[in-house]
Amino acid sequence: MEETSIRTLHLWNTPARPESKDQYARMILKHINPNNKYVLNTSLPFPLISINIPNKIEPIDESLGIVAISVSSKKDIKNQCFITFDSNDSAKAFLDGYGEKWKVGGRVVKMDFAKKDSLIGLHLRSNTILKKALKSRRLSKILQYDENLKHEKKLNRKLRRLRQILRKKGLEEAEISKIVENVKEEQIKLKGEVESKPASTAELDFETKITKKELIDLSVNPANNILLVQNLPNGTTEVQLKELFAQTGLKEVRLVSVRNLAFIEYSNIQNATEIKNKLGTSYNWHDKTISIAFAK
Image (cartoon, rainbow, N blue to C red; front, side, top):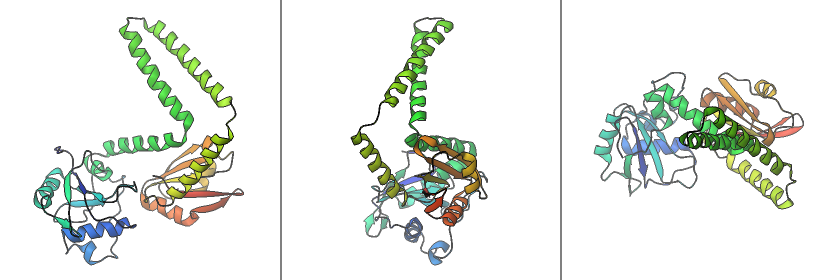
């Protein structure tokens, strides 16, 4: 798949990646350009990327226009990676030059244009596009934990479809609004009745198992600019969280009270990492041990 705007290549059949994404990126770079400065000097850190500086990213290989080598956060995708370039032309040139018989670790690597750009690729194209993608991704993360918000979004979609159907039938707007409002009230009432029923022992056990699994999985999530804080004390407020996680670059605190968790967003990975390292993965706060990890 090739589009004139996409500047990210999808590579598969690569060697299984190690735990360190940094080491993996340097290994891929070594097979591309053995004289790359990040290959020759493994202590040289890759450049930090900030969304506050639009359309400007320092390349990690100037000769080929490579700006980033990234991997999926999904554990089952071990033999794939993505390379983002400074332009579509650079990506196409790499595909033409390396796309046939390029080997990494004895394996012939397959590659093609990615279905969509990486976040870094979006950042290079337009900061507006990037922020829209981040907003959508952040909402998806929140919906994983906030059942009330998930129900609200689902209900709103149903009501929009209902409005469209009623308009096609030729009903007046006043009548449509009345019908939609009645349906909305019925759905909210029905949800309240379901929630008022006590959960069975089996349901509670299942939720406990899911929570434990999430806590284990989150400890190995790759670094990013959003922290997920779990096991918060009842009654925690966003103001209290802002005080606890006060750090340069703090952008937003999104509290999900019903699940006793919160998302803490910073301007960049460095800001999030600094406060995470300062507090640790487990932190005693208001007589409870809260869990702090990078969000997925």
